[in-house]
Image (cartoon, rainbow, N blue to C red; front, side, top):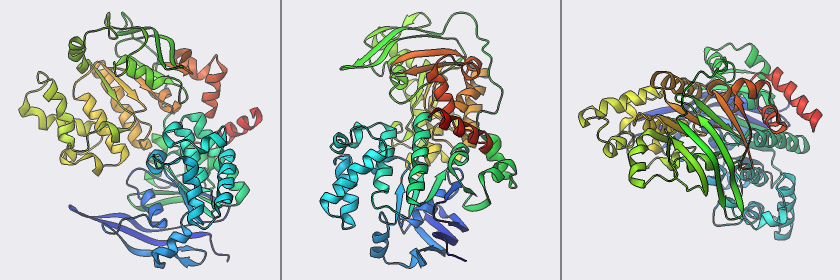
Amino acid sequence: MAEHLLEVRNLSVQFHTATGTVQAVRNISWHLDRGETLAILGESGSGKSVSASTIMNLLDMPPAEITSGEILFAGQDLLKMTDDARKRINGKRIAMVFQDPLSHLNPVYTVGWQIVEVMRIHGVDADAARARALELLKRVGLPSPETAMGKYPHQFSGGQRQRLMIAMALAMKPDIVIADEPTTALDVTVQAEVLALLGELQKETGMGLLLITHDLGVVAEIADRVVVMNSGEIVETGTPDEVYHNPRHPYTKKLISAAPGQGEMHEPVATGEPLLKVENLYKTYGAFHALKGVSFNLMPGETMAVVGESGSGKSTLARALLRLEDADSGKALWKGRDLLTMPKKELYSLRRQLQMVFQDPTQSLNPRMSVYQLISEAWVIHPEILPKNKWRARVEELLLQVGLSASHADRYPHQFSGGQRQRIAIARALALEPELIVCDEAVSALDVSIQAQVIALLDKLRRELGIAFIFIAHDLPVVRDFADHVMVMKSGELVESGTVRQIFENPREDYTRRLLDAGLDPDPHIQAQRREKRLQHA
């Protein structure tokens, strides 16, 4: 039988920590063939990324230790190679696209220099490397490749940075590309474009694609086979169709049942005076118009979802409402009082009523503070909420509410996964018992089952405490499950708004229809139909 392009046999990896040994990967085996897309599906802590890091020789040892197994590439065991031999393979024959491109692109060098450097390290002539870099930037769909070569990473959008990472990974025409959650933070249309691009490039080059994801929709869209991991072990394998329609393992069944977009749509019931009334909000940055006369009403206990692509003005709207940035003009009437002109002292006392959960918890959580300090800080600033002798019990209660353990209170942010850090940020917002929480892509990085738990938690808080939400999201199935009303934004303008049912079942605007069509469904049959529909319209 012909050998596989890449084969992992009986791999086990453990980490030695201050609190004991953690078995991250337990005796796993799988293979990848040329021209094939293998998806490794699982939640945070399942061992997906550890497996990929082991292939790329990116594990720090110690604390990591490979206790058993082989990783066979081109007939050779990567684990028995010298570091120099691995370096000659990494980037050239096996390349990786990381989850967070901003963390993996050097901010002080132009992107052109960085792509050229990949090739220069492997001995490509400078002129040939530059020509290849230009060709790659054009191929991955970046506008004005010549100009793009001279720009820095911060000058690109999230989707464009991910395309740059793909260009860098493909520079040496590798046999294998490992894509670790390559579309997690991307808008639906950009996500569809990036996945289509990976598929096209795979057909052109015949590379094997190893896709690490927690998103069943991504698996349905692009995978040929899927390996489901839980707690470091493989619990199920098969085609996406087999795994979705005939799951055998309870964990796989749990993942599928937690996929968003399957529940009943909310029917708005709020009546009376608006909690928040926004009128003609404008915001410009130089010549760029970020908000163009946005107006809407938010009722008490209501969830208003704000959807749209990157650059549509969603986050600018949220920051302007909370006075994190000053709007140029307009009104934001909170119970009749204008937040935009309110004196700072008055605004300070209102802060506990208006909370925000940011998209990136790594930046919003102080790395020097423990989880206990981060959550209880709210009561230091507003001591009237809770006496100090009850802080500990309330912190532990909040951690349990967001799906964490009471024992996590004494840990620090770096000791948690991205999804766990977001849950800490949500617990921190809840500590002040606010009347409005603005969630800026607050669940986009969470695993499906944790996402379902957090959405259920937010929904419960809305029903029990009457909390209203402004819910900024690119994940339309989550919006469908959680929101009462939807605002669709494009280029700073409100192009369409209505109830969830109106937007999802009878959208008026082509832009809204395009957003809905670009969404990924976890059912491979439905996703195949959507893919066919997109191809017909292309």
